[in-house]
Structure formats: C-alpha cells, structure tokens
Amino acid sequence: MQEKTPDFAALSREMARCRQKFEQFYELLLRGNAAFNLTAITQKEEVIHKHFLDSLAGAACLPENAFVAEVGSGAGFPSLPIAIVRPDLTFTLIESTGKKCDFLQGAAEKLSLRVRVVQRRAEDAGRDPAFREQFDAVIARAVAPLVPLCEYCLPLVKPGGKFIAWKGSEDETSSALYAVRVLGGGNLRTLAYDLPDGYGARRLVIADKVRPTPAKYPRGQGRERKSPIVSGKTEP
Image (cartoon, rainbow, N blue to C red):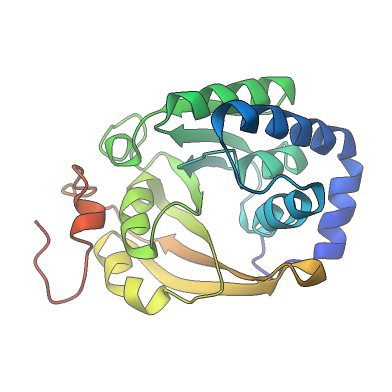
C-alpha cells in the first residue's frame, strides 16, 4: 500500500461503514477497562480520535493480504481498529500480560476478526523460529522509546517487509538510525499528521527490513532498554 499522510475524512467514512463493529468494540473496551485497566481514555469522542482514528492512520501503509504482528498489544491499538476495516490482513498480537491477552482474544472473537493472540514477551518471540522474520509487517504503539522498540520489532520482520511505529509529535528517528542499520533495517522515515478536531500531533515511523537481523538480536533480559543500541558503544 502507498504511504501517504492520513486522509481522516476517508478514514471516518471507513469507520461509518463499519459502525456496528466500532460501537461493539467501544462497549467491549469499557467493560474490559473496568476489569483490566486497559486505557485511561474512555470518553467516547476521545476514544474515537485518540484510539480509533489514530490507529487507522497507518492502515494504508500495510500491504494487501499481509501477515502482521503487533508487539505489546495492550488494549489492541492499533491492531483491532485496522483489522475491522482491513479484513484482508491477518494479525498476530504479541502481549506478555495474561489479562490483556484474555481481553484481546475475547474482543477478536466477538468482532469476528482474523486475529490470534500470543502471550509472549517480544524479545522471546524474536528469538523463536516460529516468529522470527515471519511477518510482512510488525507494528507497535505506545510501547517503548524508538531504539529499544526497533530491537523488539525488527527481528520479527521478514526481509522485504516493514516495521511501523505509532509515535507522538517528537521525532526520535535520528537516535534510531544506527540501531535500525544494525538490526537489518533501512530507509527510516516518518509520516507526520494532526488528529482531527485538535486532538494532537502524531507521527508514524517506518523502516524497511533490507537484510536478516544478526542472530544475537534481540538480546533479551531487559538489555534492549537498559543498554540500547547506540553508535560508538559495544552492545552486550
């Protein structure tokens, strides 16, 4: 799919087309939030803008019929809204918290989405041949700073695929250029956008997977965050 600045008028029409499922997802989110503390955002207009539309901002970046993994799925953003409007995609949601996995599995089943949920830490999945370099795209939103996030996600992307991170207004790409190269990625770029109705500035960060990730990555045991891949340092 072509990467372009999100067309929120078109995305709102897509939401209207799938209105019943988005309404159902909102109700599931409210009920799940009472049990699992999934999100601090529960007011409907905020959920529509900050969760639903923000998730859909990257939908057009995903190739047709792609196998997509999401790292740190939490409440299912951006994966579940995208799965609602893009039934051609197949999602694997990687989440380490059991209660969140229960919510995600229940929501996917009730919404009849092409989604499987896996309770794993991303760094463990990245070393498992069943997941390593098996996906056309790997996505993540509000999980970690960009450098460690690259180490969690790029090992899961097959060469020729792409990694997409949903980020805030701050541009972290300069700090991640070296890590992206080390991990087998390239062509790091951003798409900046403003959510409708003044709900804030955001950006998508995108990298291509241009060659296999070296076998030592991801390192695990928290080293992705404690000792991020930075130029001039030797990574343990």
